[in-house]
Amino acid sequence: MKLRYRYQLFFLFGIIFLLFAAGVVIFEQSRAKRHKIEALEDRLNVYADVVNHAFYHNAPIDSLLKLFPDNIRLTLVNKQGQVFYDNVFRDIESMDNHGERPEIVVAKKLGQGSSMRESATKGIEFLYYAKSFEDYYVRVALPYDIQVKGFLRVDNGFLYVTLLLFLTALLFISFAAQMFGKSIRRVIVSTEANTHRIKQEITSNIAHELRTPVTSIRGYLETILEQSLDSEKQRQFISKAFSQTLSLSDLISDVGLLTKIENAPHSFHTDKVHILPVVESVCVDLGILLAENSIVISTNIPADTVVKGNENLLYSIFRNLTDNAIKYAGKGTTISIHRYNSDNDFHYFSFSDNGIGIQDEQHLSRIFERFYSVSEGRTRDTSGSGLGLSIVKNAIAFHKGTISVKNRAGGGLEFLFNLPVGIK
Image (cartoon, rainbow, N blue to C red; front, side):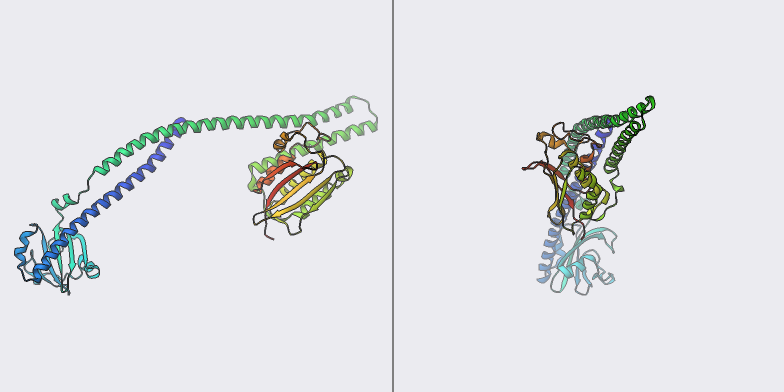
């Protein structure tokens, strides 16, 4: 693991910096060479101007060549491309038309042009420079020999400096990769430890929650099997055992739902869901419990409230919030569910009750944790899986929303959450 992280980072950043340095060197070498070519073209331009001045004043060009480099080639070409003077080839009548030579073509358009190519008549590579004048073109050229190559050779000082910087950067990258690798290992070790601890806590909590109904069921059944009970007593014990099996079934179902939300969110299909019918279904399904506890639900959700989401998870949000209020708010309370705002992205909902609330607000930040129990006040009825609010938070997170909770000024709790807007 140590070598893998360190050397992966080293090679990754090393290659990136190498490519960057190579790009800088290539660019700088090309730019420097281009500057030298331009300097050489400036010299050839001066030669062309001198030749034009001499030709304009009928001065002998051959004698003028003594002022130029010995290996220079001078050609005069008329506007039709015919050569009428060349210091190398005296038999100018046998020479091809030069109107399509690259440097002449450019000079026609821009007034001057250059090219590096092999001479069609001499078979030697030349640097050609042509300049357009009123009635003709003056073309001067130097062979691309050792002298010119030496002039165009780029100074390697910049290359050496770049190489030195590259080696220095490699040392820095190696050091940084080592430090970063150590940090990654510490994070991985810490993450693995936290993950292991969380898994142990979850396993311990689930085992504890399973133990209670299983122990109760076992006790009821052992009593029925080992003691002579009348039919009424047997029925009572069987009914209690059945009630515990329902609690056990709810716990298994809720654990499965949480696991599916966290590990397989892609398995939940999303569509346009009207929220008001979802809330009404919750009210109908929990109607008996609501009546038994004299709890009234007041809703204020516009009929056109459409959410982009999974209908079953949206149902579980309002179902578990209502279950939580029934268990802990107290008898004779009122539950209020309303949409208090909307924008282009989200609908904003409030779910509140006017019950006893949570006296110690340090518990508010933890009530969405799995199996977390508030030991004070809200203990009227603790049946259930203990996962309801955790499911609520995860289901809202699945819909890219957030949820918070606070004590109401007039008593009770208020949950504020948002869900994504669907197409109406």
